[in-house]
Image (cartoon, rainbow over all chains, first blue to last red; front, side):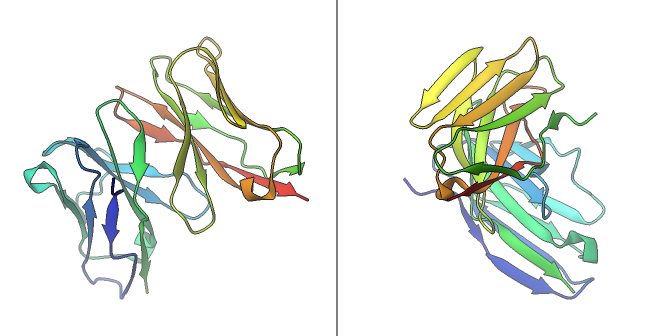
Length: 112
Length: 111
């Protein structure tokens, strides 16, 4: 069974530029998560989807961040415009309802 | 008070010893508890899940849960240098599907 797939693995951009991250969850996993992880910290939830519905986006900075999960499968996380403080690893994860959560490899963003 | 607290470490143990990692949480309604291992530069990898009070063993790993004390721990027996990593505790909050992570404990196993 394929794991959670994320792209790109690495992205370097200038501040104020836009950036987008893509995630394909494990087949059959209806719950999809986007987490942000800063160096030396645990993952922090940005948004959680149950199928197509964003059920928890309270930690998503909506002035510059947006996310979508069309057709309840793939998801895209966008930042526009990026700021220096957005440099971090963006982790996508998926799970079956109430069960173990599995992470992708992550997308490391560097904003210069 | 943070929702999930872990000692940041580093916890240094000699090869072959038992490593004990601890985690406390604030939400008394939490039902699901997980331990993840994260190597430097890699994403978190699930190693144990536990849902009821008591112990759960899987190979060299034992997870212990005490809901009354809001405490979950991970024991690693016969620690190996390859166990050197950051161990993240994750706890469900506000429903089964919302996982809150601690900041992690860095474990160093020295030969």
